[in-house]
Image (cartoon, rainbow, N blue to C red; front, side):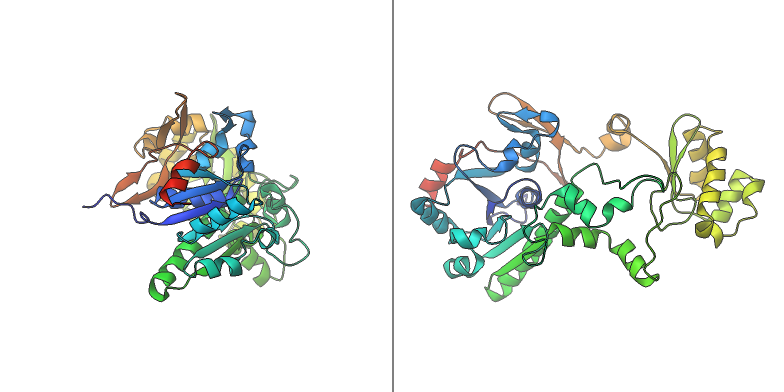
Length: 382
């Protein structure tokens, strides 16, 4: 059986910064593509300076290292005529080109799709913006928290009396990067059949709207009634009791799917026996308040021992320390360590995809700015 990855032999030029575009490049690189970051000299892409908790390794932010493993770095000043011509020579050899510059920037530089298509008609040209290229928000910064809040997403998490509650991670960036990969791979398949490239466009806002298709569709088909969060512990604004998180005697438990009647029988709770399955949403807060009192009487494991054999979908609520030390996590082998030339190591997660039952690990860390410029210049005779 061949160990070759499916995208080996594919050349991707990445003109992206921060998270969304580089996360797409990360996934393509994990799957075997050769990804060359085109970065400005000296400082590199802006994402090298965006540090979470100010954690930096070898001069760049830790988050940059996690997003840019398996890539190469070619330093070029796109405002310099000679550098631009060398970059165009690379474009002529590439299969994919990605960028997340603001609308109009690539046109000004001379690397817009029409210009690039004339250089390489088979190229897949993929762009990510904040809100699309037209409309009143097109010039607004495409930033994860802003998009979570503007898309309505921040009004789905938390309890009824909470203010808007965004996700505590860059969910808009990561989901958009995934959509970008979908579009690129689809365009590459078409190119293999037609020998014609394509322009792939995604935006953070559109990806967040698609991310919420379940609840937006409910809103549009339910008389435009806004989502109503539960009084306490709800994990979904439109789902019925018991769906949510509850405190137990020693920690917390989440209750998801399962027969409400079966749950009532298992709890042997007279105060719940008067509620019908049909009332689990209209009287959700009443039911959940009763459940909170009952579930506080036993430990999480005691409840799991009752619920799981009866088909009630439930789980403990782990923090990272509990999860990463659990045997169920360890058997996944999600950990990997990348060794830098400095002797430092980056401890991170691996690609979640398996091919032929083999896990995908990264063989090399993110590059320094321009680390591969000379080698690439010589290889491509630039």
